Every structure is written in structure tokens, then in C-alpha cells.
Amino acid sequence: MAISAPIDVPRGTVTAKLNFSHPPKDGQVAFNYVGTPPEGEPQHNVEKYQQDVTIEDVRGHESEYNLDRDAFQIIQDVPESKETEFADDESIKANYYPEVEKLLLDNIPGSNRIFLFDHTVRRAAPDANRKAVQTVHIDQTAYSAEKRVRTHMGEDAEKLLQGRYRIVNVWRPLNKNPVESMPLGFASSATLDQKDVIPVEHRYSHGYTGQTAAIAYDPSQKWHYLSGMTGSERLLLECFDSESLKEGTTVQGGRVAHTAFEHPGSRPDAEGRESIEVRALVFGP
Image 1: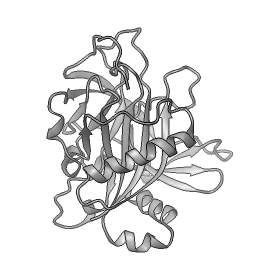
Image 2 (image 1 turned 60 degrees about the horizontal axis):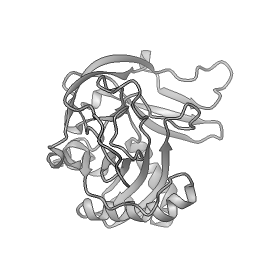
Image 3 (image 1 turned 180 degrees about the horizontal axis):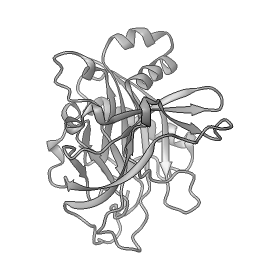
């Protein structure tokens, strides 16, 4: 994707406000209704709050982070995609999905099977269906990861669940220029304590219940972002790794908390960030 004339991209370590969550009171199960809740029920029972957080720019140190320790990884110099518009779901699946599958197989050692189960395009226009999410969260939990395997992998599911399985999001910006506004922040998994991970049931009107995680703040969390991210870069965000549940594992958590945030150095008239994330089940070794 061609890059336009140079712009003054905000860079460097910053302090920004991130939106975290309190767990429900009295030991209640955290929930969020997708759509209209049943009569008498609130939309959700998770209370959000803002916290000033130091967010380190990893530009220039991209190779120092990996999935097993940090649950995020940066891949650079990715060839231009056959998909150019990212406007039609079927075109994205036909042109972009094969590129994502190859990217994962080439960059996650030992991986031998990939299943891409959905994607989300986020736009900056006021009437966009999906915009940048500004609440700290993890897309999947151990419960929902196993459920995804059983839902998507059919008769192979039981065997695949005996080996290593992960959910990894492949995130990239769609802007022609380097990202100026609303970058993605992510916390190293090695610094995220399990006590601060709040499983949240996502309850649908048709009866399906999924699960994500909200995050409470702790000063030990180490937050990062990649300034001026371009269309030739990919960010791998690991939501779950079954290896992290084993005794004696070297995988440090296997789940990355993340959120879009307002960069204090962004110009008021900066181009709105647009992006696509493709969600993948990754199997092996």
C-alpha cells in the first residue's frame, strides 16, 4: 500500500488515559447483553473507570517482543496485499485470508494448522458500524477458546484439544499514511496478573453465550504501542494459549490485554485510524 507524503507522527513514551473495569460486586458473574437485555436486567454489570497509564513506544525495538512472553509480536516488511479495498467480506476472505494463514504459519514456530473464523473492519467515519474499542479487554478466555475449537473444527476438535491450540488476532491498519490517531495499546502478558482478568459472559438473544475478559488496572502492568504503524506491518495479539495452563510452562500468561487509546500527541485534525483484525485458531506443535 502506497504511503503519502511524510507527516508528523506522534512518537515516544506517553501518559494516556485507559478505560479499565471493576469486577461486579458480591462475587456476581460479570455479564454483557449483546442487544436488548431481558426485562429488568441491566445491559451489563461491569463498571468502567479511567486510569493514567505510561505507554512505551516500541518503535525501534520491535524484535524484542514475542508471543511466549508478551503475547504480542510485531511483523514487518509484509508484502502488499492482493486485497486493496477491505470493503467486501467475501473479497477479504478470498484475497486476504490466505495471506494471513501463511503469515501465521511462517511466524509461529511449530504451527501446522490454521483456521480463520472471523474478522472485523473498523472505520473512523461517524456512521461506521465498527469503530476502535477504547476499553481494555482480551477477546477470548480459556472457556471461549475451547468453545471455538469445538464449534469450528468438527470431528477433529477432540484430537486438536489434546495438543497446543491458541487464538491469535492479526491486526493491521488500513490507512494509506502511518497511523497518527487512536493507536492500539497492549500490555505484556508477563506483567498481567490473573487476579486482574475478569471473565465476562457475552449473552446473545438467540441463546449463545460467549466469554471475553475485562481488565482491572495494576501498576505492575507494562503497556506498549507501536507508533506510526503502516500497512506493511502486522501485530499478532495472542488471546489464549493452551500451553499457558500446563505446569512448568515457559509461556507467561498467553493472553494480551489491549485497547485503542487517544494519543495526547495526535493533531486535532489527524486522519482517523482504520484497521482490520482477523481472528485465527492456531494449532501445533
